[in-house]
Length: 112
Length: 114
Image (tube, rainbow over all chains, first blue to last red; front, side, top):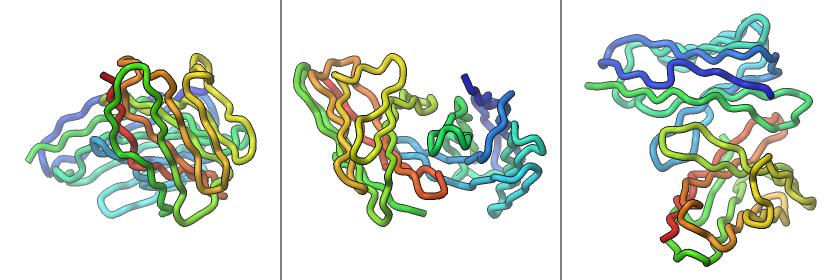
């Protein structure tokens, strides 16, 4: 079974703080996606990384794909209350077509 | 990103009735759609993979006779929860995959079975 371990599961911080969410696996993934989900809504795709060592930035969010394509991280700088939500990583493998393996999710709360 | 819609957004039904949920990709054709179930503050649990024109592939532990999936066109998949019971109450989410194998999610359907 391909597993993606996501940590931490819960994170509560103050506005302005920085944070990092990790996504780790013993399996190699051909792509890794990060989603953000708000209560009562579907996940929204934030980024897709496909190359080992790749770094992508989306405003205050920085995504990195590990060199071996087994792990990824999401770093948020100067978090804001609007960043509150469930962050999900999901890995894809060429042998699985478009099927994704999801991490357990990180529930982030940014307090004003 | 691509737009996926779901209907209804919420539904309340009596125990024993069947409920149909529609998932549509609005601006692209999706050969593959996925159905997930999600409990509060948890990740998504894949129920089944739906391919246009063929039978759905169900994950282990998911009853195919209870959760009927039809994918009649490249833009529409439906999930029917048959003889629903309170334990079926959950948030059901569909997604549609693009040619790049990215998944775009619908807004979800909240099912409450009384």
